Amino acid sequence: MGGFKKFLIRGNLVEMAVAVVVGATFSGLVQAMVADFITPLIGAVTGGHRPDFSKYSFTVNGSEFRYGDFVNHLLTFLIIAAVIYWLVVMPMTRLISFFDRDKKTSEKQCPECLSDIPVDARRCAFCTVELTAVPANDRPPA
Image 1: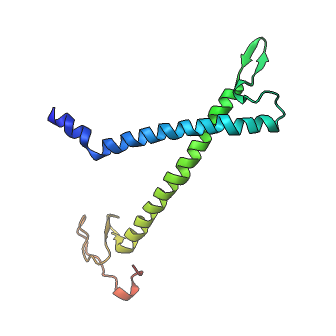
Image 2: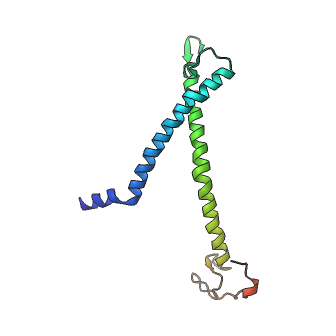
Image 3: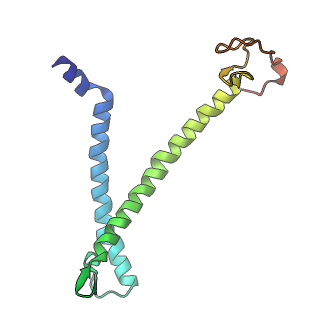
């Protein structure tokens, strides 16, 4: 039981639970925005007589295809995907590239085994090949 308690109290699990709740709430908010604002706007632009875009449909050989609800869900997905991309993916990509750029100024590649080693290293820690030291004035600025 103690292991289960540690598992539940771990920070990652709590953070994930908060993220799921916030994500579900955000999804509901976006769905309401699509249903209440965007689809009526599309219905007004397309000249639809019914303000409820989710009930739009067409019939082929007696089969009814309700495309309006699909369009609502598609718009919801696109909005959520765009928000996730701009608020999560882009900042994380910038943050990772910042750390990679910092790593490139403090590390070099071993010519023998291609491992990353410190710029000031005189011997590779992985293959033990002797390296020529780079003079301090030839190194890129940190």
